Length: 101
Image (tube, one colour):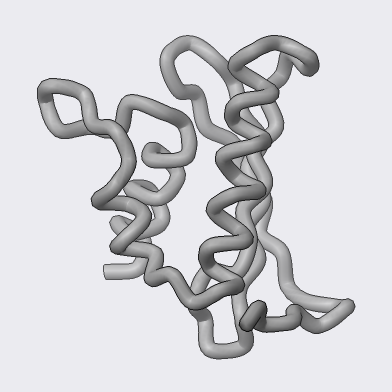
């Protein structure tokens, strides 16, 4: 069952650069502090990278709202050979995980 988010909630916004693309990231949380939603917007809208990032963020948000732990999704995403995140969603989750410790 999907957890409903309050109509009004805190939303953090920050920016990252990943693989030469600039993204504006929005993050919403449940009252418990767990991630509830992620928004990923690339500086060049309509590109394949922008569409893929937005779709990944929507899918991640739905997973969180259906109870998927953040760490489960984070470990499932594609890494680079050095272990860093290959995609922008993984980079955001890595950044958020580092800021929570």
